[in-house]
Structure formats: structure tokens, C-alpha cells
Length: 388
Image 1 (cartoon, rainbow, N blue to C red):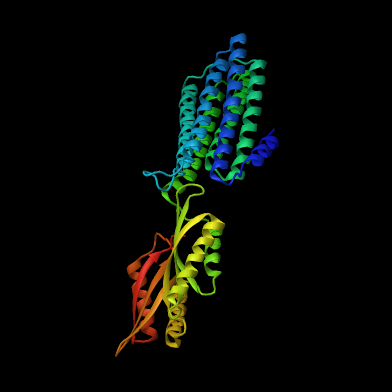
Image 2 (cartoon, rainbow, N blue to C red):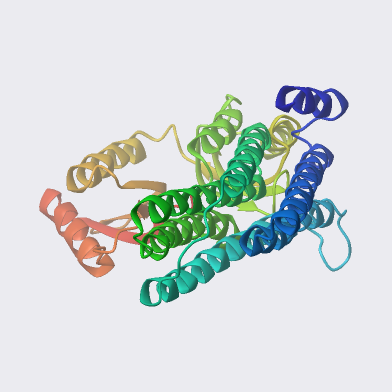
């Protein structure tokens, strides 16, 4: 079934496109609603026929599980809305918001299970065991395992974090139901009725932990996280593919949802090149990145003097001193300004994010190293962090 559905959706749509992502999420949601509806009806009928209150109650739990699937469909539909006056960058981040809602549903499930488990530990109750109950629960686990497997396949296909959240939700249901079966068997054969609450509490912790994991995955793109190393390399390689461009720095990538990325960068070019020609080169690079990576990028032109022997000499000195101080540091926009009694070296210093960073100490240390090398050197440094 999984292969058939994936083959069907890949045959009709480009799953990497915004429309394809919407159709994949919609298919996931519809399958989830149908599976949960099946489990709900089955449990309700069997619970009514056998008089099992627990099975009947679990039927309504499956009905509420369908809420996650509705959120998935709604999120996909809204995320694919075209740009408008109020949202010139599109609605792609709604996909992250819908995944955020699913993570809250997972956390709520964990807290509610934990609450009821504590009550059962304090006041244990005899659990009604029946073969029918166990069979129904095993069947429910089988369906939920397939849902988790199916959504995981779709997540790997589209990298849609919403589907990852739904997959985790289904796995949590499997864990909770499996724990219920263990509790039924242990309680029935040993008479130890506290087991129901103890196992339930352990499962609750596991579910809350998984919910926090999904929450962290969602908050990253919502708050703004660094782009992947692969994407950074792809952008930089395309920029540097033009022979006139000798360096790139200050790359910034803004994620407005899947397929809606806007970036900016500084491209270093020889200062003696014709400005009209360089402008044409930059235009071509921007178009190439948009065509190949589907990224709208604005590239700032930084003219540098690459043929000046004195500049290259002091740039090499700066490279040696800075790398000797910390090989994770880099610099750019290097300029040399000659004075009558001293030389000013002006550049931007890029340092990694570190809780122990003391910018004043770093500046003083590096300035002292330059002075130690040559008393006639003054350095004017602007410290910044990389956005990638």
C-alpha cells in the first residue's frame, strides 16, 4: 500500500514543488483520518458488544487523533496560498505552525497520560482483562505502526517537518497502546494492579520527551536557524564559478517556508575591473542561483585590490596572526591605509558563536599581536558573527 500511494503521488506531482508538498500532506492527512475513523468505529462496535468501557473510551481517543490529520491538511492548504499584499513572502511558514500545533497535541497527550497514571498509582484499580481487548489493541498498534511508517516515508520524500510530527504522534500511540497491553497481562497474571499506573507514567515521560523533540525541530525554522552546510556550499560554489569573483562572504539565508528562500551575499571582485561588466556578471550569478536552487538572492559587490603587492603582503601577515590566535576565525573586507608614521589595517573579523566570547579581550589580544609584530601597524577591526 505504501509503495502504491507513493508511486501514485510521485507520478502525478513534483513532490519538491509547493503544490507537490501540499498534495503529499493532504494524502497523509486523508489516510490518517480514514485509519483513525476505522479504529474508532471498530473499537466502538466491539466495546458496545462486549460491554468494555475502556475499549469504547479508546474509540473516542482515535476520533481526537484525527485532529492531527486535519491540522496537517489545513496547514498544507494554507501554506500553499500565493503571495499577497499582506504576505509578500508567501504563507510557507504555516507548514511549521501546523507542525507546532501537532507537537502541542503530543505534549498534551503526554501530560494527560501522566496525570491519569499518577492517579492510578495512588489509587490502583483492577484492570478488566479480556482476549478481545488484547486483540483489538494489537490490531490498533498494527494500524498505527503503518501510519508511522507511511508518514516517515513521506517525510523523507519531502522533508516536511509536519509529517515527521504526525509520524511521531502515531509512534506515541503505539507505545501507549503497547504499554496498555503489558499492563493488562501483568495485572491479570500477577494481581499487581499498580503496574498500570507505573507503566503509564513511564510512557508519559517518553511521549513528553518526543513532543519536546518535535517542538525543537519546529522552533528552529520558525525562529531562524542556519542553513545547511550543503546549501551554503551550493550557493558559494555558484557565486565563485565566475572567474571575475574571487571571494564571497556575509552570506545570509532567510527561510520563509519550503521553496521560499531569500538570500544575500557579498562578492569580492577586482577593483580594476569594468564596473558595467562586473554588474552583468553579478546579474548572471543571481539568475543562475534562482534557476538552479530556487533562491532569490541579492549580491553586493565588494571591490578589492588584488594586484597590490603591499596590500597582499599585509593581508598575509593578518592571516598568519589571526589564524595563530584562533584558527576558527576569518576576516574579509581587508583594506590598507598608509599614513606618514603608521599603517592602518582595516577589516571585519568573523568569530563563531561562543558563550565565552569576550569581544573586548579578543580585540585587545589581536591588536597586541599586531603591535608585537610591527609597532607602526594600527588595526581597525569590526567583530561580527557568521549567519551560516
